[in-house]
Image 1: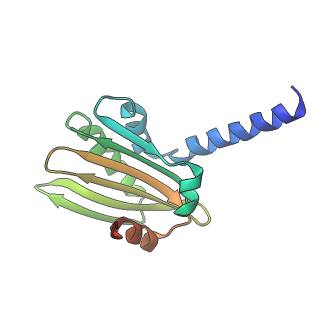
Image 2: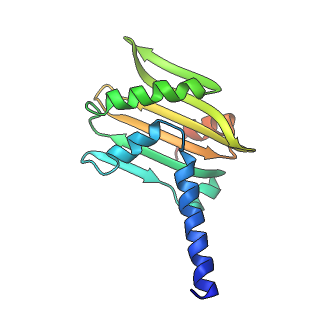
Amino acid sequence: MNKPIRIIFIILLMGISTSLYAQQGLQIASVFQKYSKHKGVTMVELSNEMLETYEMTLYKSISFKNAGKAMPLILRCLEIDKKKAKKVKEVILDGEIQSGYYQLPAIKEDINRFILFKTSKKGNATLIYIEGELDADDLVTMLFMKKN
């Protein structure tokens, strides 16, 4: 292999391994893996350009039009992952999580990690994983800022 091709290959491998490492050790990774290509499911992963705008290194979300069959796995994964969280904020109705905010310990200095979860009365659900330099206040501001 000539040198330029070898360098490109190494850079690609580093990018892939960083993405795979991002959710390593988290149970929610299995939700993304299992359901990302199912009908009625939308998965979003932001590009590097968008990530830099919001001081993120990774953003992944998965939304379910009808989360019925996926809910037991989602809730089981959240239950396990939230045990590792530094901060937990949840809204629980009739014994079930309606929404959750979980700040996980950093895996690297200045790289914060968050799991966000929300359900709707219509049976929809969204699970989001974010990591980056943004802190909890930045995240809350971004989530609740008014759209023009």
